[in-house]
Image 1 (cartoon, rainbow, N blue to C red):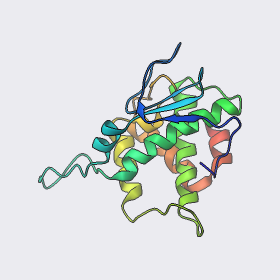
Image 2 (image 1 turned 180 degrees about the vertical axis):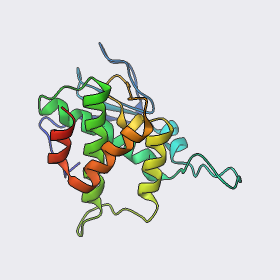
Image 3 (image 1 turned 45 degrees about the vertical axis):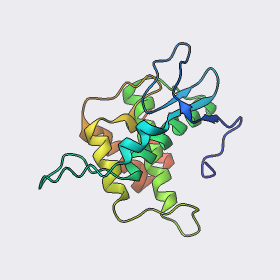
Length: 171
């Protein structure tokens, strides 16, 4: 993820999440600090990206590919925190920092010249996921702060104020 290069870069395993010593893995994407691998359950991630349209007038879930992608990005942001020697456990620190960094990354995707570009509904999809289950705001063990609005505020801080604000806000 070129906007946040780290050394050594994590490896990606698309065969599933797998096990990781001393870490409670998260689904559908998990970061294992012991091996520096991001494991991804592609079918589960694809299910998360489904539209969420049940035909109801009001759906609690706004699906979309960015709902899934931001979860993937957030696990990479746990690897970024590990590389920067920041704590990677703690819902109110590492988890919210992952959400915040994911928001900052989302802003980078909206800038001219970005390899990926956000669509009009991508942030809606990310927000829906943050409010629904908060996986994108989880620490390395999947711990999430209970308040969806706190998770959303962390993401918003990253989107609007960038990485430095994330480091100041979530210690």
